[in-house]
Image (cartoon, rainbow, N blue to C red; front, side, top):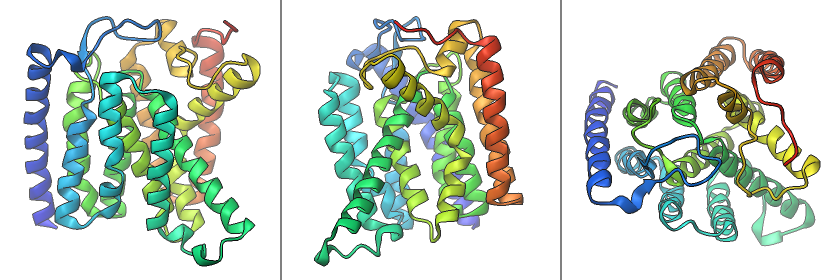
Length: 318
């Protein structure tokens, strides 16, 4: 354990150095990696280095080689895809196909679908695989959708991985501290964004962690810890698709967190609201179990509806 803690501290220092160099090189030479606020949905006002997720993704790969965490390697194609998407803005069809491919690779490697007999494929096994693949791809995309404000996705995943390191697997500690190094630069006002390379990679890791649990209750409990992030994404998607009749991947500023910021709430407060929710959910799940985290999520949903009504811009049709 002491060796892992020492290794994690070195990872934090190394990650911090890499982020400083990444920001410097992007500002001075690699301007193709600058995110320019040219879209109406951008919440930032100046050019900012993006695709910073490539750094903590590479750190994850380094850790996986040392400690044999195979899922971090299987998810790595999304790092590459996201990196190119940050630069060239790939079509949504290419992204979805790639995400489906990685989802199937992950599911094929995990315990929850070990009961599927691929030699004797039937309707039931196909429906199970289809449902799990659909859910996996949705989580990857929802994570990407929510990465639109300083410190939001980085903050909640940092808390989540610290929780995993403390109570489930200490081997997540190096990755947690790499996320902390990123969060230092991503906190408002952000000096770097994780980009699609980071958000899709984190989403795929959540899929791998949840589906890698031995029981459904364990998988559901871990997912519910991060559910405030995905409730925002899900409600917005439903309203956009069924109420506004808009395409799912069309850019917008209709998420709860975006409407809060547009109405004057600071990015720091938004990041803290979500991060504290994830911290409370982690404590509830570890202390009380599934019923505890479900109760917290219901309470958070009620608080979210209250905040949405009083402090967010109304959800209006375009």
